[in-house]
Image (cartoon, rainbow, N blue to C red; front, side, top):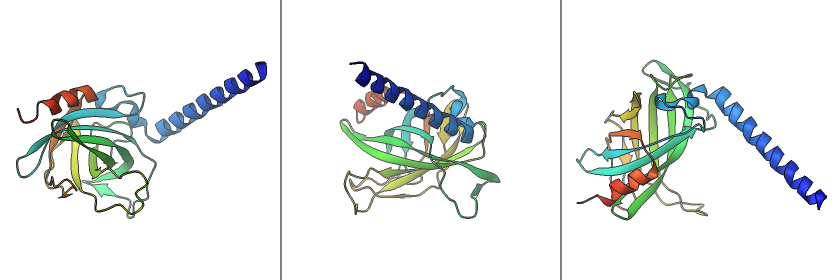
Length: 197
């Protein structure tokens, strides 16, 4: 009995050491991730909800979470408004089209400026339709872009010249804006239930 229990304990300890090492490397490369939007984010991610508004005036409840991604190569270095590219971002988002009808999306993004803080950084996201598992040659995937900055604790994505491509479901969101406030998924679900009332 002592043998298998000892192996399991060692396995758990090595797993914990590996997790701590990954966390430490991520923080070393992305110190801003410890305080996103002025909040203490020791788990290195931020999540918020708001209503995304498209150029046609339609609005949809949105829930978005993001965290540091592994660095991706950017040809030319990447700059925005005099700020150098500082981090690649990844995450998930959920868009409410109607009560009980939620579109899941993949988030990829870039942060310009803000090595130690997100306060003055410019953040750009692309929200892309979710790829179904085992879909090696996926059909055309719709998306829309968001860009903005933190204003205090709110992530204000207010640059409406960003593009979009229609989703498989038929919705088309472009020139989108949204103010995301720190929130959990339950608040998004509540907002989704009220759509159309």
